[in-house]
Length: 190
Image 1 (spheres, rainbow, N blue to C red):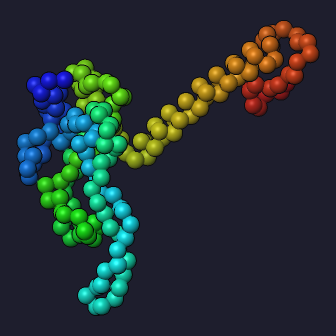
Image 2 (tube, rainbow, N blue to C red):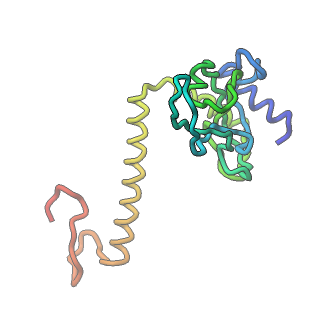
């Protein structure tokens, strides 16, 4: 993808979802296509003993910036800019990391390996972000559970078909021979 194509796709996202209001990237879209390897996140790497103002020794988590994915991961992703937390909140969470006063990016949705974003897909995802953002947490959980149930039923159907075809050689509606009969639908008699 050329730089011009990249900017055009990011502009589509910016037109739908707005731009960063301040900081180093003011005017840039809040959602952008980025390479996975570019994105960093705070990562807890052990702990250290520190002395409080009252002289107590306490253990405090130690953080470092690490890649959000394998450093060699060259996939594209939709990244979302996070507004910076207050300086006090940042220090409370990540005491040894420099405060990100201009915000930072996280991977919102990775693309499949080898795939590049297209204008059609960018317009679809821009609308999808709006749709998903309009859902309450309860609606989001219900949709997620429905998706899991659908995939589970599809899997059970495949297993049932394989079992029927390969193990019992059962023909629906015909009397059987020397095979084991089983009830395929729970709640119904044999």
